[in-house]
Length: 118
Image (tube, rainbow, N blue to C red; front, top):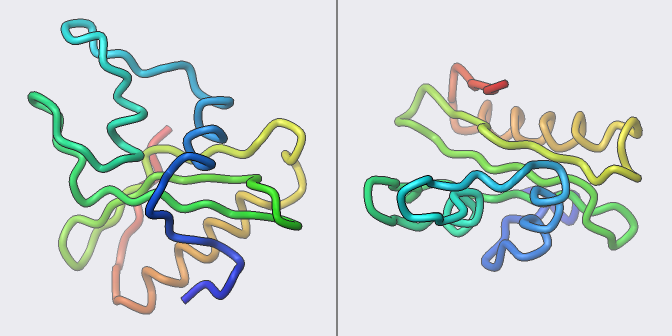
C-alpha cells in the first residue's frame, strides 16, 4: 500500500532502535519489563495487552529515519501513542511524511478520527 515509502514490519528491530533513541524506557515498576518493547512486538504480558498494535518504519535512502506505533479501535478511531525521528534526520519532514501516509491509509479505510497522544 505504501510502495517503498513506509514499511509494515514483521520484525520491529529497526523501528525499536529509532524509538529507543528518542524515548526513555517505559518500565513497569512491578515486573521491570520495558513496555516499549512489548508495544512494538504487539505482545500481551500480565495486565498489558498490546495486541493489535502495529509498528511502521519510514526509510530514506535505505536508512531508517522515523518510526511510529499505532493501533485502530474499531472503524472510527485510531491512536498513535509513539512517533519518533532519529536525531540526525529531524527537521527534514520525515515525520510529516509518515503521518500523512498514516492519515491517507486511515481515510482509505474510513476512519474518522486519529488520536495523537502527547
